[in-house]
Image (cartoon, rainbow, N blue to C red):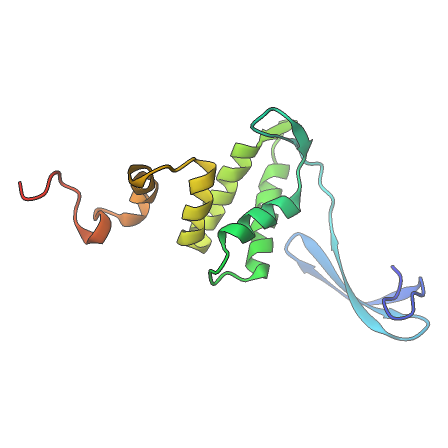
Length: 162
C-alpha cells in the first residue's frame, strides 16, 4: 500500500479492527509519518448473474449499490446504509452453492433488505423489478404493510355502502 501523501511503498499497521465483513487498518508511512486508513475485504467466489435476456456476467456490488441508490433518491437513507445493504446482499449471493443466480433472485434479496430500510424505496424498486403497472398491482405489493386496513385505514370488506 503506497502512502497517499508521499507514495512511499512501506507503512506500518498501528491498529486493526473488524468491521462486519471487512478489516479497517490504521497505518503510518515509514517515510513521512503520514497516517491513513485502509479497508480490506475478503474476496468471495461469487456465482455468475444470469440477466433476463440470458446474458451472463460477474456479480457487481456497485450495480446493486446503484440500483438501491436510485430507489432511495430523495429519501432519508444515507450512503453507508445503502453500501451495507448491498454488502448483505453480496454475502447472501456468495453463500449460494449454485454456479449461477438470476438477476431476479438478486432483486428479491434487495427487496427484502429495502423493506426494512425504507418502504418508499421498496415500492420504487419493486415497481421496476416486478413490473407494477397499475393501482391493483401496487395495492397487492403493499397489502402486507397495510395490515387489515386497506388504503386510508378502511378495512377491505367488499364494496362501498353495502
